[in-house]
Length: 254
Image 1 (cartoon, rainbow, N blue to C red):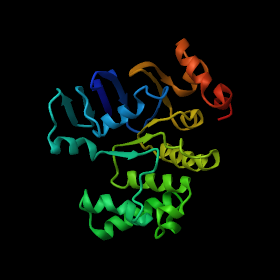
Image 2: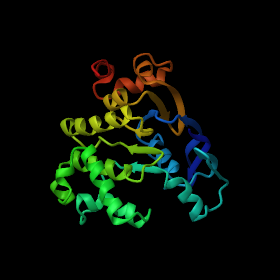
Image 3: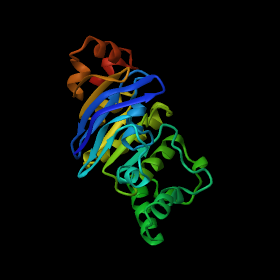
Image 4: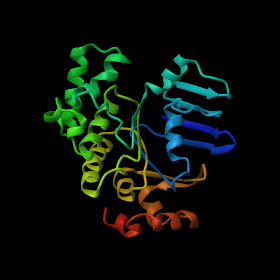
């Protein structure tokens, strides 16, 4: 179980996350939806401690970290961050390293794996995302969808407790987006715990079992994805969903 309790985050006077509490059961997939600027990406970055909340706490299994406005010790940050994997909107691959090296780098440098074990893990993950034949090429030679699949493999390499995806399909056209959705759907079926921020209603509806609607740093509505998309309880949720590409009709086609 992964829990966030009473998370508050400020950027100077801007209260970006307001008393956020949520739970991610093991093996669950949760989508974060909401307008740009609603705090989705910040919430993900707080969970892996790329950003530090001013108050609240995070629990990953048996590890709990409380925030009180004071700087965190490096070892406390690592207790949480090393249990998370992050997939970014713009792939964030190392341009001068091969596909294989992009995946092994963190295992070798951060997690201190042996070279043989790191290569074996990277090759297994590349096979999972359908790109083992691209192991020795540079990222620039790949399509956007392929680059994002490598980024997913890299994030999964150290076997994190939760995979965090920040708009994983937003930089891709529909065809390439479908490649990434297929990989994420496979991971969901295998029981990977995921929290994904997205504007892609099709991604949320086809992969996530649970959805959270976030606006202005507050949770407006949560619920079963299919139920929330088709029969939202809050008028503001319904209004937002109707503005997404394809609207509710797209959900019905999933």
